[in-house]
Image (cartoon, rainbow, N blue to C red):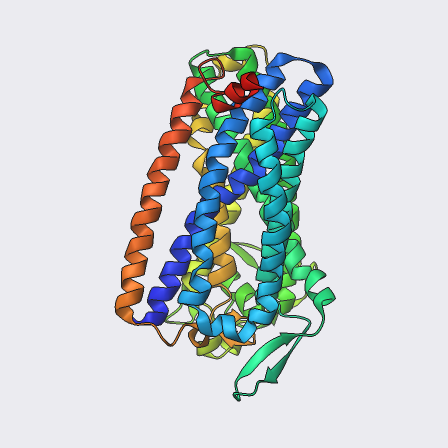
Length: 454
């Protein structure tokens, strides 16, 4: 493989692995903060045990997420130096703010939460985990505004420096802050993270309920997560609908690839059974059509025109097959999660909830579903943007470093895979170990130990 392909694979591996930890951090931070708040409000020790139990799993995930995030950023200078030179003045600003504001706030108050048991008041301690949760979401704001600028660049102009090289310079920071594309990405991404947190808690709670362990604790955990998950998946679907409208307006080639639309026309039908054939520039299968539904979903107008892939030069079309199938499976998994959370809210009201063994087993094995949906969503977002690294401004091929060799990239790619593989094994081992023990078997760990020291 050439340097461009290897660099794309390396960035894909590191980003997708990092995003295993990010959504769970987003979801568990909010739920842990909620559990502790309920303890402050009610003095019910079950809520306190829930905060410590799920908070311990949050800490494990948070620590590994930080490690993978730091290594990911090295690639901007190593593999994508030409990209960094071209747009660094713009792209670097939100990343710098994320590190100096959001990550700093997050790091400080997570220390207060870990070591502050019995050293600060209950309300201050609960406030500390809320500040961690807010900072975690604030971190996502800046990162996704940066990515949103890559998807829909605004507030910049192209200038030539003293060396005669063209680069993008920011002329309107407010435009970056108010970029609609970035904000829809933020709301869609963080709410999908909340779904990950909800399914994580529901799945682990289901495992314990199947074994009749700590029934009140895990019933309460499951029901809280199910309600949170249902609200979150509704938000994911709603923000996804609005995001599709933005894509239709700003990246019509991506929309055409998502829906495998080859010819430009109005009132485009949506086919439930559809198989694109990129080589022949058509769909080999089109069955069970929903009249004008692509136009309705994309523009909220039944007779809206959708531009087909054939109206774009071949070298400016995104890869159709991965974009189309990733989008289809993501949507299918979204409605599956909607159905499961509805059943979860309903069944968790029943006093004999722990006897619904089949449902609990399905929930246990559904833990990976929101993770998979999130990864598919990023494939749609990033692969569907190709061949652009900054849409309409800089092609991916022009952003790769010109000073690295195939041997260097191959070596670093293999190194990242081995490194992340080890971290993945460690993460699974630690989460499984502590999740299986239950709240009465040393789960509080160093948290309670530090509290006793105080």
